[in-house]
Image (tube, rainbow, N blue to C red; front, side, top):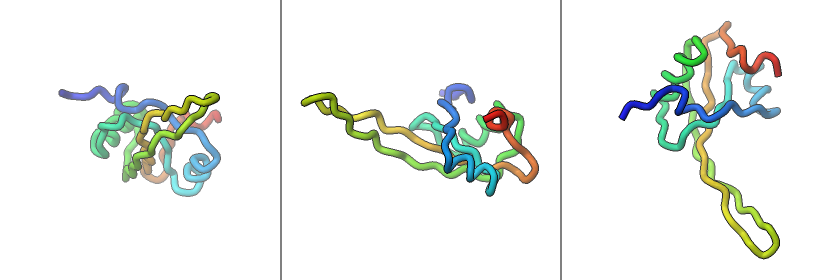
Length: 97
């Protein structure tokens, strides 16, 4: 089953560390689907944002435990992708933040 690029990228992650990576290494951070691989992520970013991707790093993160009174539950596991772009390129979505 072929996955659409819009379905692979869940949302961009905007954080202090992500902004530092963007400035120093030209890397952008996204939350992606858990079943997405690096090749699919690269194709999705290139298609959606019209940029050239050099490298994709991924990591799987476990969900955190949350408590409300005596009830405890666990948030869903998720996957993060750090995408390195070719020198001189940027994603306009992040520029206004």
